[in-house]
Image (cartoon, rainbow, N blue to C red; front, side, top):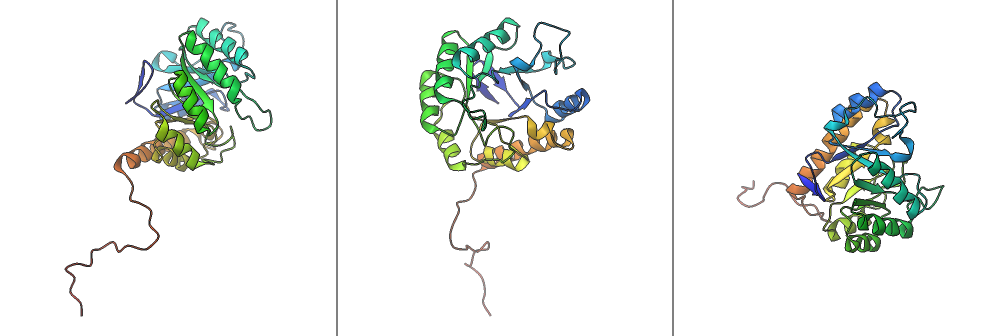
Length: 255
């Protein structure tokens, strides 16, 4: 179990919604993942007009922690407005702060992200900023009082896995708040790698929703996260340059 602010979790897989070909696929993937947290873009949801599409219309949200995000925001003010819309609609006040700074790479804007977090913290939200692999920014945000840090593995939707494991490890080692690896995950091996580095959880969407079999991929991601966490807790052997015999030489008889 780990905590983000006042929220407690058993599953370390946070699952995105809304990209599935059918509602049935989404429902099966959610069940297979055993997630406790469903995340979604507030701007793509119909929070008030029931006649508009709602990807979670047939999901029993009472069984999950809903984790709205501010995807689509390009400024701090816009991100704050989106967060307040979600809050007014009665959704969880834990918010993923996402402010995009470049339309081609979809990389987050560090300055606007910081400013949005500052405002939302003052308003009493549980704040989880989405950032690049920037250790200094992560430290500044932690000092500001955010409740979790969400560094990307690689740019959104690329499925490239962890592009910069060294910087990601720097962030994980320096943070006292949970680190949730977000964006760019492609397969269960990426989940295992992130967890072996010491991440607390993984947030993913496209890797499951756009897989040939989302239900099976959701289960694979769940197991990859579990295996990676176990490996991290077990403590891997050190990497060495020279070969070391698996069997001890002491006590062996020689011909």
